[in-house]
Image (cartoon, rainbow, N blue to C red; front, side, top):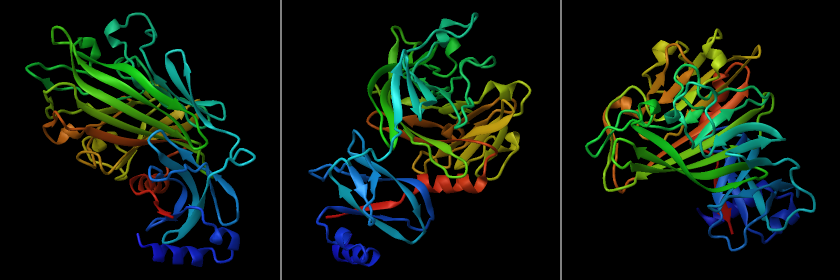
Length: 405
């Protein structure tokens, strides 16, 4: 970054805002790059700032919400910024006399779950410790914690399922591996009723509310039940973040998941080539009982059988709930292993999985971190290819933010 260039750009952009331009406060410049931006999250690190900002102030003197997370990453929302253009904001170190926004994204502990809400409406629930089995006849081996138990659309329609009638080991949004080799054994962390492996919730490190997002950081472990005594193969950390409701004409919820997995001991978890395993999503059971599941991939494919095994940046799964269309899109980050990752799309049931091991054997080795990043877009109505492509582009390449000191 060249200081002279940025100061020149600042003076040009805001020459009419004298008081703002003459301020000695630290500022940031936000650049759209090659994309038109509309209500997109933007980020910058505050680690080098001795005084942490409380908000942003634009050239008109308006105070805008800013949120600093536990890792000192600041997040704000860029409402509108045409491609090739830039904006400059002043970092505001004092709390404004009135709240910048009256509504916060919240994450509150309720029994054995974390309830995420916006404007007091539940958006999703994360399951901590296992809850009770939902019906008789299910094996205790199916009890599970450490997953997103339910997700709701902006209109309040449920888009996921938990303990479905078919494949009761499916759980909302979850992340187990199926075909594995650990030491000289073959644990299965997906098909839990086999009793060969499970993923356990370990601890909730933190959870938070805020004007921009709410979230949590939680620890899980992959336990090999074929070992005597059972042995942990992987440790996992989930960073889960739900943004305040966005969208102008059709509101949507944006949820980020970052999973970091590493070996628990000096032994690799080998993942032989297999059809499924990894990030999974189970859609509303209405789409499995008379209502067809509708898929749409970033390649434009709507035929679920043709889409299975293909590689795509994103995939939307949806259908009718209470007579209205709704659904959820899974956006895969370009830094994910083997991006664009191949997909498992079930031919009959509302089930989706990103499965990089479809492309051949892989392994999580001691000393390495296997990091997976996904964003979920939840909205009512039929999927809009152009809108989902725009949202994926924003996720893959957010606006560039630089400090001017």
